[in-house]
Amino acid sequence: MNAFLTHLRSQLQQRGPMRWAEVMQQALYHPQLGYYGAGPRTLGRRGDFFTAVQAGPLYGRLLAQLADQTAASRSAANGFTIIEQGAHDGQLAQDILQHCQHPYLIVEPQPAMRQAQQQRLADFGTRVRWVERASDIPAQAALWICNELLDAFAVHRLQWSGGRWWEMAVQAADHDGLQWNLLEPDAALLPLLAAHPGPWLEDQCIEINLAALHWIDEVAQSAFEGLICIADYGMDEEELWSLERPKGTLRRYQQHRCDDDLLKELGECDLTSHVNFSQVRRRATEAGLRVRDEQPQGIFLTHLAKPWLGSLEGKPPDAAQAALLRQFHTLTHPSQMGSAFRVLTLEKEALTNPICQQAAATHH
Ligand SMILES: C[S@@+](CC[C@H](N)C(=O)[O-])C[C@H]1O[C@@H](n2cnc3c(N)ncnc32)[C@H](O)[C@@H]1O
Image (cartoon, rainbow, N blue to C red; front, side, top):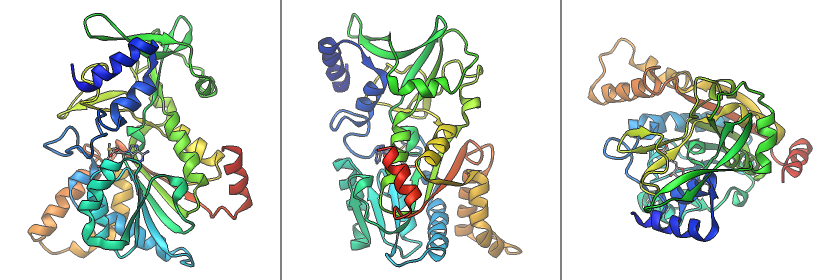
């Protein structure tokens, strides 16, 4: 039994069943024993999973261009900054910083991640700063980027049984094992469940990402103004909670193998679920943010890449350009990352706007 499971079992034996959201939070973010707790994981081919960042530096280069465009369209009275949350080992930050001149602010609550990012980004000196949470961000114009952040938040898991919802919890079983248990759902989940009447299959499972909704509130209440780009895989609620997904979308990843054996090797594998973009958009609007745009990643990046693609027309690409074109294909082709991933762009005005202040106060 690994160290995290020993720790979890001893908590379960003392406290009884724990809601899955709490188990997942600890399995991913326990400061020493969680999957992300001890610092960055190896991502990409040699790691457990692959993100757009590992496709190569083109992704960062295109986002740097987006930052230039965003900065040009905003008043720079308080300066312009790129904000990133979910920066992991700092690879995307490095790729972006190499292609633009803007200052960069990383929101990073985990000391081990921050240390690794500081090492990697040392050459950029004071252009890069860190804050622990969104509420520490100073008033300024910014482009806020997060790639695969929301899919990594701990989610509540629910099961439809006997004509009603139950919240799934974990309890200790014989022989060092773990097993599922069912509890009354957390009260905060009830309005979100009521918004979708079904139909449901007996034992159908769904997830609710309350942490993503709290994160939207935090973004809405922070002092910056500008754009928030959320790049992630996910769907609208109709599709996500349809009868075609009776087990929901929670999965564990280990060395590029993916399954729903969620209680196995907790602490040693990544856990992730699809983003419910309908809920995120709804909460953003309620919190005073404006939904500016939502596109499949392929279309979003193709638009940004137009000037570069145009510059290649009529010339055979050299080896460096050919490598970038391969990255472009991985990021944008519908059979790769082009259509399963979306980019939702929200817009936030400065909190001096009374509508934003009112919405922020309502959700505090
Ligand atoms: C799936 S990984 C994505 C890493 C990177 N953005 C990429 O696309 O390659 C999720 C990352 O989100 C980070 N994370 C989760 N919750 C966070 C939070 N509240 N603030 C900052 N980072 C967070 C994790 O530590 C992890 O590095």
